[in-house]
Length: 223
Image 1 (cartoon, rainbow, N blue to C red):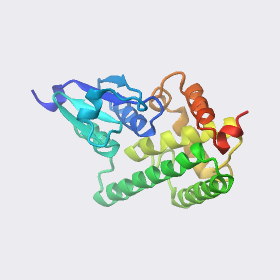
Image 2: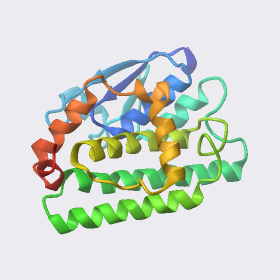
Image 3: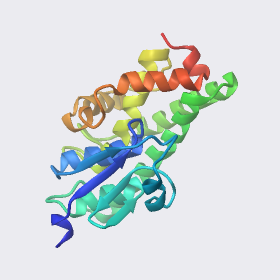
């Protein structure tokens, strides 16, 4: 049986932005899949046995297991019709770099979500704003990062923007509101069907609950 005929099962945690990237890719490419949610605070034994890093996402492909979101999204792209990567090798390499940039922004977001230190929180806000300014300078096309075609780099940034948008709504924390190109791209991403449907319906409530549970600066600012 070829990989294109194998059953795909995504192992997920409902709040994980890296899982969300894979879901967006699956939906954009119209690939059938099942999804299994686990509790990362108390992961099942079967998960620990097959996850090299003890992290999600995992993609089960028949008897094989893939880990790391970049590898998973590229695999999804490779086994389905068309491509979410640019054809030009240089542009494709630059896209991969910006996908890593998005991952680094998610690390900053983690500090925004969890830090109980006011100064560390303020520094994370400034770091995120600086990252967003770099994006503003870089963005040259519309409606998507590369122009007319949705790509894996768009899928990589969508989870970040969804969480930054919620952080603003729930705590008043702003990171890119003075950057018109970033805001336009963000708004279009958050209106994309594959992005809207890439999280569980109760995602905003779960995200708010996480901020409250972490009891950091952001949690203290919940409206």
